[in-house]
Image (cartoon, rainbow, N blue to C red):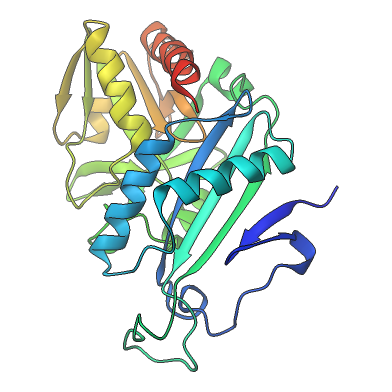
Length: 287
């Protein structure tokens, strides 16, 4: 079955969807994106993703292509048309396609943003086998640009990091800058020692994860202590547990870091409980 996608006001079969070769995301990486998970046919954390999208657009002085209400309608229609029960909706906004390639931003009065959305069907997303066994990560140098808080489509180095992990026979990589962990290639990173969760504080150095915010709120409500600070790989290796969060993995236990097993090498009880709480509460609040 061919997916229906959304391109600049039109719902089209994916085989008919096109954007200009002069689109600035294609030529300059000049675009931002969001990924919203779908469980039980409903959107998870949509308001958070919409708010972060608005922030990313503002930081790049890029116009919004439509209102939040219109975006919600598009998300819901694509989920319905494509019959998504568990999966994701990918959204991308670019600065549009000028008449030719130029480093200078085009006049927003003349060149409108490009808006593209499509769904990804992921049956079993919430019941991931990886969550039951945990994932293994390696550490790599973080050489990305300095505005990681903006969710841009500039994902070459994270993709390279994923490939480094694959070559090493593990699942993912945590990036390290000046001796401290920033985040995973496509997720926020944490470790647990006793009853305390440690994760890097929000800044321009990391993405302000929507799942991160929800999980830390649920952790505090569950009487777990949360400490936001820089931490090293060695600290994480000496922890009781570790995990990552993202819109597509929710809460995913980490059982090995640079070859060092955490605890008994199996997912820890606190990470698993946080995953359970997140899924329960997110399903209740889904729209």
